[in-house]
Every structure is written in structure tokens, then in C-alpha cells.
Image 1 (cartoon, rainbow, N blue to C red):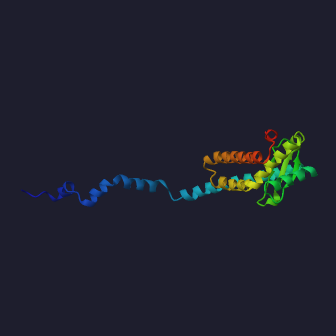
Image 2 (cartoon, helix red, strand yellow):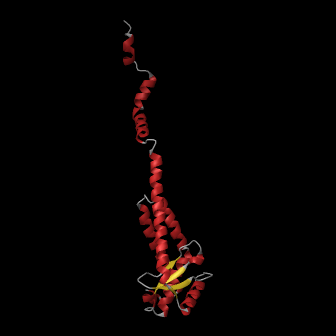
Image 3 (tube, rainbow, N blue to C red):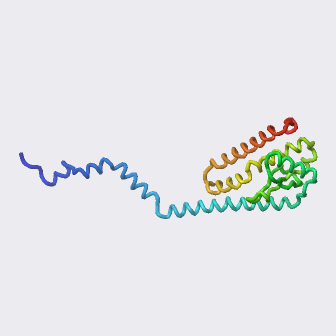
Length: 204
């Protein structure tokens, strides 16, 4: 029989590399497409957007801390009997020193305010309007709850929370986790009060 023409050989007998390339063409095309979809400026631009969000979160946190510090300028030290009660509660739950108790005007929730990383900057801020409506047992329960936050280290968790939010501001799950974290902290402090005090009704 006559031999096939030379120009017909490539079409009739594809070489092994060509056949292999044809079989792997989807994977190769995907890699090539991915390399084309990420231009050289993408990662610098993505880092710039992330850095901008990071600075916005940190800046807002700083502004809020400074604003609340200015709002506390009208706060006054609590009477000595309340300071002594806070010191006794702090000793009971294992704190060496009790933060100063301050009374603030306006409608603010009772809180442990620690704008710095050191414990000496902590303040126990109570609203004047609420405090005078509480009996001694209720005041002790309130102080126990707020000082339990300091004993557990919750103020440092707030700083860690700010750092995590600044790094992962683009992740919607962060907001949900922050809310859940604070809810769990409040429940833990409630359990401290219930375990230490017999006046559960007063605390409720």
C-alpha cells in the first residue's frame, strides 16, 4: 500500500505531548485565566484598602475613648462608704486593689472604664440617678458584677477585640462574634454575683 502523504501525518498521528496538552487543556486554561485575572497592581491596591480600613477602625476607637474621657470630667468621687464597700468586694473576689468609684451624671450604664492597658487607669463609673435608688444589698451586687469584669480580665479583652476588628474589619462575622463575646462576659459576671452573694433577688 502507498505511504500516507507527509502533510497528512500530523492530522492522523498527533504526537504524545500534543495529545497530553489537549487532555490537560482545562487545567492549563484555568491557571492561565487566573494569572490573567490578577494584574500586578491588585495586591498593592488590596493592601492599601485594608490599611485604610485598619486606620479607620483604630482612629474611631481612639476618638471614642477620648470623647468618653471628656464626658467623665463631670464625674465626682463616690462617698467613702461606697469606696470602702468596693474595696471589700474587690478583696472578696481576689483583687489586690480596688479601682476608684466615680459617680457620673446622665443616663449611662454602670461600667468598668479602663482607657489604658494598665490596671491603675481603671475606674468604676456609676450613674448617680441609679445609685441612690438602690439599697445596700443591691449596691453590693452591682459592685460585685462590675469588679468581676476586672478580675476576669475583660478590659484587656476589649483591647484585643479592637485589634481583631481592625485587622478583620472586612469580615462581617467579626461584628457577630463581638456581640456574642460581650454577652458571654455579662453572663459570666452574673454567675460570679450569684455564686458569691446570697441576695439573688436583690441582684435581679
